[in-house]
Image 1 (cartoon, rainbow, N blue to C red):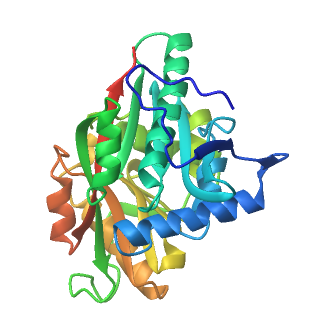
Image 2 (tube, rainbow, N blue to C red):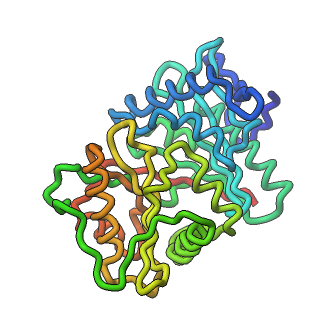
Length: 333
């Protein structure tokens, strides 16, 4: 594969690191490549944060996501040994290209990071050049990963935002013995048809309009993005209505179930229904459900600078921040 490298980026792989595009067998990713990628994800998490964060299907989900740039996402190899992986995501609606590199710390990690980030930036710049103004390259790094942070800063990215992963243990006294009753006029609905899913999309779009870098999406784009991953749990998609009106959503998934935790993928409340305890009510129902399913706890992600006080709300229901992602950005046009 040809590599166009942006001005100022390092092309010296040093230890013989090369790019090899991910292979696909028809529409499906090659199983040997998926196994190699999953091994890299687990090794990376254990080395950097001391525990697994990637579920068993994380690798496949990453490369089958509708936004993944399949032809450009590549393994980083030394000989036949995988030492890293670079995944590129082209979000044309948000005008963002995400450049994510996994390289477990070791002899080849700096070279793998430099080559992977440079490749990603070259692809991102080509996208921006052919698609008009307003494009940004973005990435995220665990706060503990100083090597990755230094590598991405070398190539022009700047830190922009931090995001917490928060968790409550299933044994926490903050979790009620049973799910709390719903006030009169409140109902939690599990959508079963197109009308219900469209109501969830409406609440999702409206709940986050005033949040940092949120991008509303039309239903036809939103639906495959929300349901493409293996952890999609239709029984865990809850639409809370108040007097029949869609008011809030809690979209639980099983993306962390194989490592013992439930996950709240989306929790949103429309502006006109805020201040009535809807988010707390939905979280308590989610915590009880996960505990009763035998899971060890429940996790979610949150913008640490969220204006609405979401971090305080989550702390108030027993959650604590267990790790933090640093977000990075580099304007392209």
